[in-house]
Image (cartoon, rainbow, N blue to C red; front, side):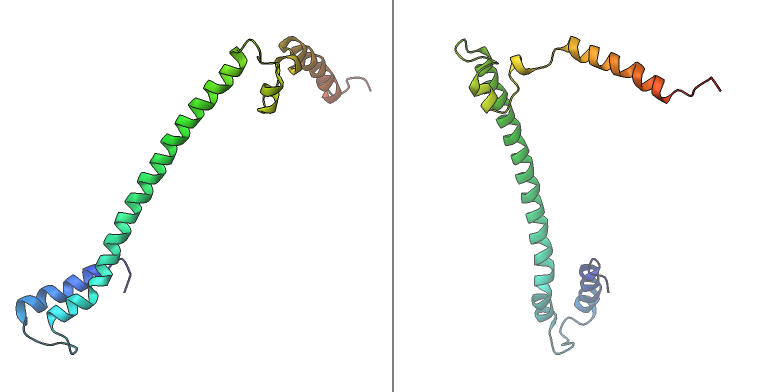
Length: 131
């Protein structure tokens, strides 16, 4: 018997029992005793549904808190950059694990490096036409 179908099986047993022989003791139990004995089965399923809902709510709450924290981080870093006594070249900015403006490679030098490397790579991989 599959775990997922146990509640269905309980209902398949209790419904006809209650309709056709409600006063009978089966397996040494009355219908009420049987229902009480299997209540843990259905109660645990309800508990799991509730816990899954709580986990989902907690994950959503954590995501919202993370987004708020990221916004505050950007605000503080922007404050460091905008502060006339600190700025994007300050030790504080560097200590916050950002690359100071003075240590960044310029876009132009990156383009020159890339452009210079590209023809060398092409000529090295081109087959020779002389034999």
